[in-house]
Length: 369
Length: 88
Image (cartoon, each protein chain N blue to C red):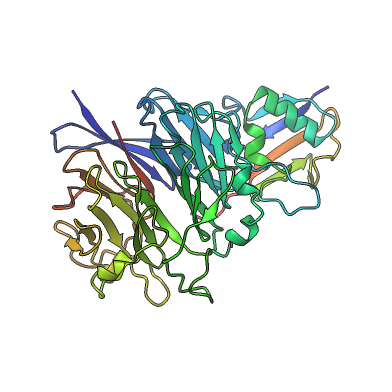
């Protein structure tokens, strides 16, 4: 019987929720890697038996684990992501956490990308076993300016996006740093932040230094990108080079701050966000303690609140950037995990149901097939 | 002659649960290289890509804190691999 599987990466290990398709009851399993900080778990769409996990513990260095049997057994990467060894006089960057994983293009079936904190881009050619720094980005002459490193935990490289039409066409984001594009397989990069606000910078029109929290490319219409930024929700339709602030159409009492953004698997007009409180000292909790997802069906021209089933008050959790996802159905199941250790599910955002609670702080969710 | 390596619990997944293993080498770098040969991957969890001891790792030879991977190790010494954990 077909199963729905949801991988849950938490601050204290990895868990799974499984159910037989069509059955309402989810069964929680795990933990695996109890005590490990699991930043990302990703299934390989090119070979669904393969899963890759970015993990570390509080004291040990970062690493990557791979599974080729849908997560039953895991093997540590022989050569985890690491920066090139620096000259003795330099102040070198060392990978503190592997934060993001992206399978490369379908024509490169064993290739993967990884993003780290401090910001670094890495590539594996052998199924996530041996990783190598992408010098075109990590050693770009502009990198020291692009990667500001001003946030308390250092900057994070995330949202590595591969154009399904061209494996050389890549996007990535640094929080804080901005969105960057490469059209030559990562040898060179250009900032792509025009139109995005950076209210915390002295120059509101700065070409980089922005804080994209999550960037998503529509799988069927890869010229359309959406972005949930520290300063708003944006959309761009390439080859345009200027982002449009579609978050300006959100209710003013809610604002357009948050971490994740999730796109419909087929319809490029449909997206979901999970707004967070970005006022004053930036609590980054659900606005007013009343969590809600907001959905657009028209590319961000308008937004609809979807809070049926969610707590009506005094729910002050945060949904992190990798902690919201959907499946591939035409009317997709949506999931989000909270910093309070709950997993919520709905069909297209219409009625939310808590399907797991009492877990550690949730860092990422991933639907597996 | 080998030295003894005392392995902190977070690293014992590499040593099949062993709390104490033997390794050879004339200095810390060589001992860690030997450890990594036998327990692949263990070194990178303690030492970063620039050969620096990671922030929450402490190494001791007998009772002396290690500050350099070039510090000498003698046969019969004990190298302690310590993980410094704090918070919740």
